[in-house]
Image 1 (cartoon, rainbow, N blue to C red):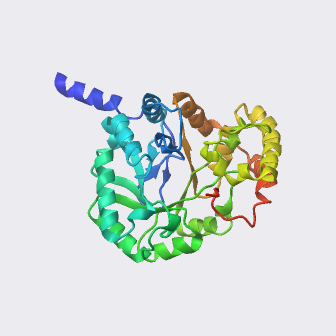
Image 2: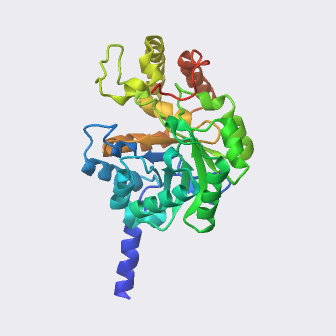
Length: 340
């Protein structure tokens, strides 16, 4: 009996200690947190000066504070991100939701199966809760593969219990509709923030109608919504953010500064940061949840505090209008946030 009590106590300690209200993922039986931990930071080809120990600690802190949903991809560090998740969180796997992605180079039937098996190995798990097509076929000059072929493989993985739900990422409404002809799609992952809102044009209404969850990445517009990049900020020549259209175009960047200055007094009134205000606005949008990365535990804590910010309909509308200082000038832009 003593041994049994000890086992129960250990299991309880390994459960997430915080509480965060969850939301249903699409039409599935999966529950996700509105704040999702992103793990692209593990890819040192894109992110510099981040230590493995800090990332592991950040992942553990996120779970301790109530985040149960972790987003990754096979391409993030060529599996390193998935491996770090396993190292940090395997003892709490049963209480977590893992979301990973298959890259555009692996969309043939056999390639999808093999990629999923690699991710399962990396994550040290028997199943992936949400498995997503990272980019549409043909992206980055990759081979064109019929969506029917890719979906056939994903449906098989679902039947086998290796994945629980299927999602897509960076798809247009037309591409999402086509994929939905071949199986249930429970989520779409677009770049979406107060400063980049292409998903609102057509895709969001379709997602509301079809009960498809929106998992917004670049939810802080690659840091622009933190307000830490001022008018005269000099980005490192190797900083991948220089591919961001809001930074590349001086007029866009000037409007970003104007909008940030108008958000600051609202954030001060709500006793939060501009970043927290932007995330609070985002998770108020229909079907929308925010993927937020973190370099360290401190950033995780700040992101989680977003949940405590209550916005009235009038405040949501006010923030919305401030965001349009930037987005009203992007109507003819290509829908992806970056110019590669």
